[in-house]
Length: 393
Image (cartoon, rainbow, N blue to C red):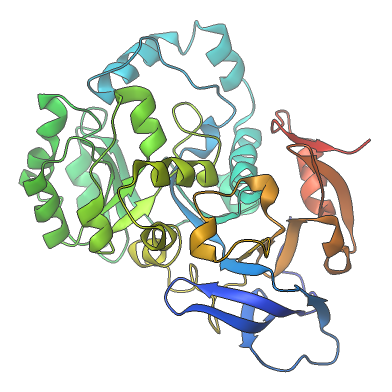
């Protein structure tokens, strides 16, 4: 799929533009060459014009934590709950070659599993994703979303005892990710001290989960410029509780991640619903966590905003919502009116057909949609398909 071939500019008028920093304005957006090239400017000859009739426009969402190759797995755990994610990992490992459900999921080619993980995100309005594993070659040539390419990582202290060397090799202007304090026991609570003692606690550190972080740990992390990825549904599923994230949110150092479907919800929109239900942060902070704050933490200066020069990654919501802030945490993927990636409509309600002349009719969770033909061609040859996403007969 080549999203960089020349295409006519899109001109979206009568839009309610919801930028997480500037707030909401009424106006028009002009998209060309994969960027926002004008806001409230006149249309130009050759533009494809479309009246949004007051629909809400958000920036494409940012998912700060996924394991893209694991989204064809069902949710799995082997007892009611765990004190530490390491316990879950130790129970999972011996089953990799023997459990028929796991073996079947692993037998799907890696490229197909990665594509499915990208599609999961795209359908939910997520256009930029952090993949917490190696940057496999198919992610460069075959991903339906933007996958962060410059990053450092270690899985965790217990699976990557050489984590400090990985951190030292990572440039300080590149984010470095690690699962940390994913538990409620003394082992999980002690991981932050071990990380700090190894010198791996600077402004490019992004901690994932953080359930076992104490108030002092959180203050220290924020003081060092570290950030936290919050994955509440995964935490609740494995551990029965989630992290205290309010101080990270207040500091603008909180991002949201869906994790994979092995332990998380279906997608980032569902994760946002779980996050909102905890009552820990405001709706405005939740929006920032999947847009502008995520972009800042990931060192991406052209996503997460609706502004001139930004990537033309947009999510169009029904006009019935009072605001974009009000919608996040309540809306599901079938409710999205359109998802635009790199200036091109990828999936949308049927009335967007003028902006997507080469389209295929599909069903998404029982609602009729249209999708880009090149996306569907790739999907049709995928060995594993997305539940609820079907080609119309």
